[in-house]
Length: 377
Image (tube, one colour):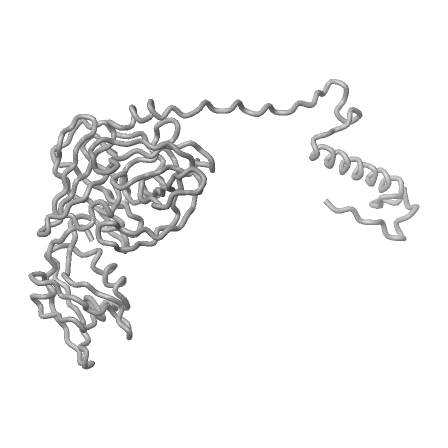
């Protein structure tokens, strides 16, 4: 509301029809000033007695009582039966690795980190609660977010976790990370606090030394360890609010504790719902992984340069050799090695694709290749 000074021809015309005289405007001005004072004092939390009246009492809301300390032992006892231990093997080398998983459903859908199952030919999952062992298949994954969804063959009646909401977390909230530290098969619980709600990191996979940029991570003052990847970050009530992903590996100078990182559960469950929908995206892969059988890098002139054509796989059988550049798949341009990965991400084993290739001498050719089944990305 604005207040305008009256024009000269309005002054003194009190009885004129349709006009407001000096008295009316003065009263309006006083009222406006009075209201402004009341509003200003009210915003400052101190209305005077002559405004509020004798029967109005000012009160200040009492601060909520502090929450009791988190009970790590009780929470661990509740959550551990809802977790699984994951063991993988990579053929033909026989290399193996271990990780953790979170049971989402009684029939054996398990949430874990993508890097736990990456490259795995055989996945075996042990239920922490009962000790039962299950072969597992990969339902889907998003390698860019380091999330995968497994299915345990023959599982039924498994206790499943209670999901929380990572969106409600605040800095300083008490949490606990639980997982198969060291691959021993016995979950280890590490209490701590939330130190950041949106951190970007570059994670290195200890198995193959590959690096991956991850964004939007929870940062935890909790010393997570190898083997806890895919495990649960739970709040003080035992609800899962994150998926353990990485540790800094660097001890802080103050207390000697390493920093942990986790994918917020809200983000992880978005990916789970996408996988369950059966609709792949550029980053979310559904079902068995199709492989071309090449190692590639970015070509200087655009495209995916073939660095290695792996013996016994489709690219090798089709005659692809080092130095050739893949510029298109089924007519879709390929501008980089990452683009090739995204294009193949929506394909399935036994799909036939047509590759546009540029030879080192500049000549071009088109090759038809039938994709094979391979380990998860």
